[in-house]
Image 1 (cartoon, rainbow, N blue to C red):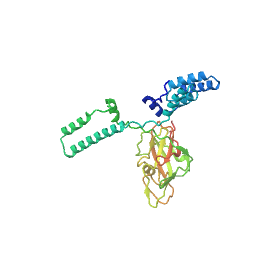
Image 2 (image 1 turned 45 degrees about the vertical axis):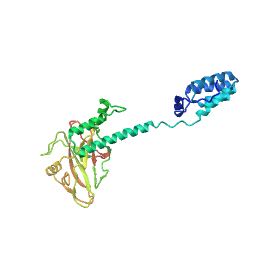
Image 3 (image 1 turned 90 degrees about the vertical axis):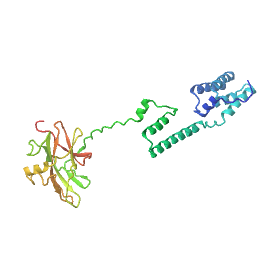
Image 4 (image 1 turned 180 degrees about the vertical axis):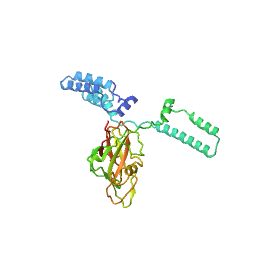
Length: 310
């Protein structure tokens, strides 16, 4: 065995600079060598350590233990030489990669300058195309195939938004506030399915009337927005009051009898609750409905939506 201080190979240096955790097999055999030494079997411990340092020369603990149990002075010097080399900091990484990146960046910038100048000077389309084709002919370290290019420029698939879940029901008389409006369904029987459609109203499903009490919280008379109230069915569909139906309903059955003002009328200011009939056309497959104040409210009043024959 030579007494010359050893030098780490390039591969061993990379292993030392990387993950410093000992391999599982090394740990297992290293513990066995220690157990053998503790039991007085120095020959067995030395044999294991020599095999370990040969198989795992980048594990400093193996060399330290081998130096401690060395059979001869020359073996101790040899092992300590490895310990010394392994304790040295790893060499800095090669600067080749930054230079390559700098060169590539310079080429890209130069190409961009050429293209911009061509556009400013009004070079004909064929000449610009030639510049672009020349730029594309420069070899790349990682060429993209047709599949990769298609993935880069693929348009995203539109996301289909699920139906909103049906809002949670609240008791009749519960007052809701939405912006500068407030409203409620005072009693459960203030909403029902109309067996007969009033004259002048056309429907495709069931016609539901809800007599709501609404307050305008501003200081000026104003009309309710078309989407202030909505009927949300069990399939998450939103239904808004039929335009003009509230006025036709009041004219046919009498103002002050089935409601004070129509949905199309301006409501007085300062929050006075006014009864207003709202009429909704819901599909025949609707099983349950919740009336909400504010299109995206998470709570509302449960109202009947099944006809007598359903």
